[in-house]
Length: 249
Image (cartoon, rainbow, N blue to C red; front, side, top):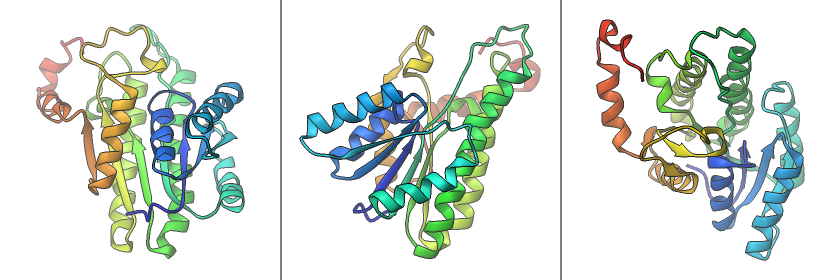
């Protein structure tokens, strides 16, 4: 569990759940390094948070999560400029439109690069520091999509499954050293990435962030957000493949 007096890094912080998590961490009194690839949006959001709080809390760092080699050097820079990091929140993610008859390696590669490998790059950079310090938190926002391979977005499902499994292995490696790894699996959430999709019962990004940070506070390993998705995905995981392939879910 983190000490709550260090620096938090949020990768994917210019919109959606990442922005909501960054805002809530700033409200806790933390210094937050907000990372995203769009400088205009990122700097505007960081400035809005600071203006609302009346103090400097949000620090913008332009970063493309697909640039895996940049993670280590940027982690070093953040600690030099802001102080010791004790929480990493990886929320970056992409989900391009994919037609049912489309098989696009470029889109699949992009999703693996950002959703899975980006998480690995940043989590490894954090783990190298947290392990000898015997403290720290790594929180990764995965998805209920990781629970099953669906016909609509197989590349997205696979990327989130890879992320999820990596975080489980990291958790099993680090728990004995006092480092917490929490995996958040959101269901339907209203974000720019899901805009235009018919998502019945979707929750707000801020509510998802609230539930994610509550899971952090309780020391949870894996949490479905909101909790009803644990039962929903239990049912979906146990549908026989011969039936599942006929469903449009």
